[in-house]
Length: 338
Image (cartoon, rainbow, N blue to C red; front, top):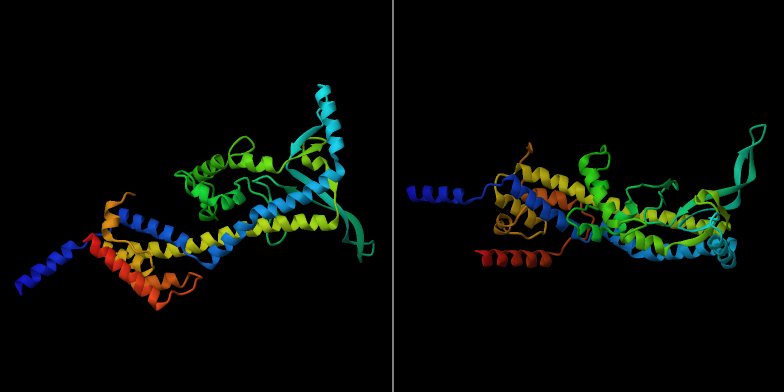
């Protein structure tokens, strides 16, 4: 009986206490794993991302066609000739943003307050720069100096940098500006670059045309057809849908991570956290966590918590055979460590 008690005590002593360092390591591993899972949100983001170059190129062809109707290549050549000949002439420059308009009908009111249709120039701003505006679902123009479109498009490149975080705006949604947010926004923008360097320079130079007139694009609204206008408007909406897809994907992960962190806070031992990770499909070992760098009111059972978090994921359930194969792989890995 005494030997049994001694063995029991040794077994308890062998369990590794779960400290904050280990909690953070496991949470980070689960975040990486969640980002790699093939969920519906991730598929939507990936599919829309694959279309971005084509939709920008196609919209640019439309814009170029409109501009060149108004400012012909012959006009551009003459403008450059005059600008180069006379020091006081500055009439032409490269630009990536335009105001286009077409004559359409809009509803108005007569003197008796009755609805009437009137001819009016319908105008909109179209900016092809990397940090250019896009349209949200309600068709309102949406522009952020923080470069949300660039963060979504070059997410992998930003994620690979130690000091960048392409998801920072989504993680900080609803919060006031703070040093943590500013730190990553500044680092992201510095890495992406602008007209002088980085991806911004490469992107913006691709979408540039010689324009005649004053510097600010609002001073030169150019006429186009209604069809051309609608094609460009659809382009802005497609950019907005891509940004929203990035937001929804990361929001789904943040929702899972919130639940995971509550569970990890309630666990006392490392093996409980390891069990949770393995139940979620992220196979890790205690030795792996211990040797690497880097109060819930309810104590969640690891399996129950894992099932709860799985229910948040929009993905196909694995077959029984796939689960068994993964479990066997985990057992094999445990044996090799021991």
